[in-house]
Length: 246
Image (cartoon, rainbow, N blue to C red; front, side):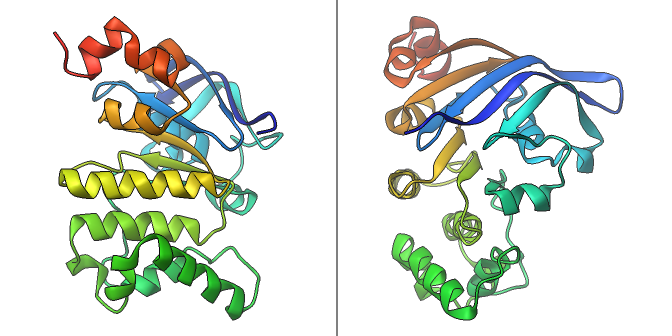
């Protein structure tokens, strides 16, 4: 690990010019690590990721204060495509796939910013299949008709096709059976071990903290708690609010 790849510095996010959603949020993600962002529904977790990936404008939102530094450069004024080219990509909540395309066609769309030849892209498709063997079995299937777990694998695989330095991963376990959740998180850990930094938003706090090195807790647009994953897992407030303990 060498320094931080992402620094979010005291940002505020406003929707529709009047609705203040994030209020002075700051966080850092060290290069090569997994950092978990925890919080209840409506706390602003997805908004934080969209602020980083520059997807707020599609929802009439904007960063009105603060700065976002990715890989040494301020990026919050860049387009999402530019940010993907720089190596930061978001896997959005809800398993967004191109429903009318096949699994493999979905994966290939993830390489649209790349300029290498077909051989290099083919090697990365095969790498995705090594992470997700089920996708190889389903590669010719229409993505809109595969299972929710397979769609989540497809969405993560498509992000990997851009050769990212960092993935912003939003609620990968949502709606999945426990056995699939374990498979997804094992793969996220394997991807991280190959050098890809992960900022993970996840309702399953216990699972997120089990693979993360650090974590932040977001409450109604603010970050009142942060620390090492073990420290947060042992924190009574976190245990009561997010780990289901009385």
